Amino acid sequence: MGGMKALENRLTVSGWAPESLFGKGGRMADLFGVMLRVPQLKQDLAKLGGSGDGKSRISEITNDWVNGKGLEAIARKHFSGKKDDDAGTGALTDACRAIYRTIVNSGTWGVSALSRVSGIDFEKLSEAEKRRINALPAMIYHGVSSEDAVLMRMNSAPRSAAEALGSLYREVKGEDEGRYSVGGARRFLQDLDAADWDGVRPESAALSGDGYKRVWKILSGEAS
Image 1 (spheres, rainbow, N blue to C red):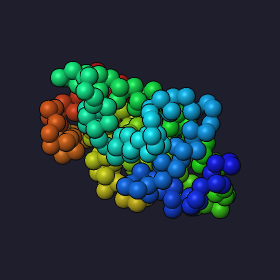
Image 2: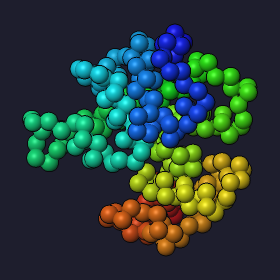
Image 3: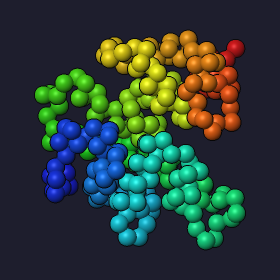
Image 4: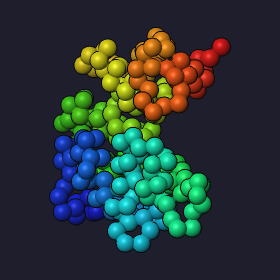
């Protein structure tokens, strides 16, 4: 609580918006700076931060992850070293460890906790504002930057297609608040055909739309 109050610029409700927190020049570095003072979080985060301005390095990796960069791209940007092999195996290993062991655990828990001691009066927020802030840890956990994409990931949609699927879901359902339903999102995914999946897969993807649909059915337990 002391760390949050001591921030040079206190985070307002708008500062907790995904586009503000995870955008260029966002405030994740400030939050990681506070987390690095918490004993339960400091050990793993400090290792990832390395020497120098550790909070900025952790923030950059987190932002890249949430904004859709693949593990290979994150490995090349943040973990490539002179001693790495030609295939970049060491860098990829370090990137996976950083994301899945440190950021997905410590970052998710830390953001959730800090939002509750930020001084924001949650009782005065609208339901949409509460939901948006409450979704931030899930965005870090799943590696996406929107509430709709979180719903897709909660239903086992591949991360590389989750944002596009979320946009399609929002387009189909409109701005109805009732769309924020895990069950509703699952029914939406069940109704998609191979052509729909083809429209949301990345252009460079090796899999076809039918392949993406098959992968989703296996991951979600829908495959017969």
